[in-house]
Length: 349
Image 1 (cartoon, rainbow, N blue to C red):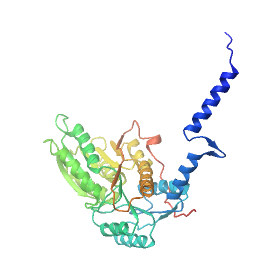
Image 2 (image 1 turned 120 degrees about the horizontal axis):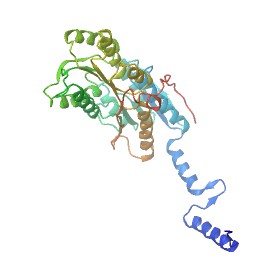
Image 3 (image 1 turned 90 degrees about the vertical axis):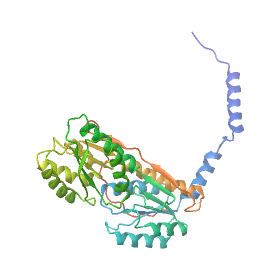
Image 4 (image 1 turned 45 degrees about the horizontal axis):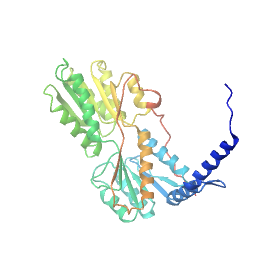
């Protein structure tokens, strides 16, 4: 069937469409719409040329380097200045670096806290000096403009609930569990252990035979676990609060010939290193809080604060990342980011 068109009707439709665009304020100008130009001008005014500083506990660590890589990439695209400082896991150096950054007055500082108390006074001082503060993955006892990261209590509960399913009442397992914490005063340990124990205390079969801090160090985790597995040959599970650290515990269990008996759990950022531990059978399950997503959230938090017009310290925002279980079925591809190089400072105008 052949269709016929009324060119008069078509012309009328085009005219109506054009009138609709003008009426809605979206009429095209040379080079695009007025609205698009105004939106981008406002955006650039808030962000372009601003400075964002990143202060992790250390560079050269996949978790922190992935945060820095993402923040730097996002900042450069927006014409912002990016700076990173490396205190090399030295608390005193970290305090000094933060103090120096505050004196330089960047627009935003993204900082990772090694403990809940160490940087409190300086974070408060930064906001009093007009600097927005985003705390990254481990909060201090001072609530700044924004927190980005895992809900550690939730992570602890999720780890413990799966351990109970594997080793608790009705499973036939021994119920014996080892816990490997990081730094005891770090938020990741304080809140994660609270979630773990709230679950374990509800199952009488679960017995925590060792609860020690390895200070985020794989070698310390290996030494601790080597002793634990000798003293408790029927150990059912080992739970560690960071993948890189817990890889040491897994190695000790493998050295003892019990990697198929002891279910090794870890939480962490989800780098290829973590996924390799799962694929090789060293980790039974891994709970990833996805560092790449956290890096994007950190920049979104900074971007939100700069556009808000709010006085630093006057608001508190939270950006939580969703934990994702990884096992041999999905510890690959997009779930495992490649280990990045440490970020370097840049400036663009």
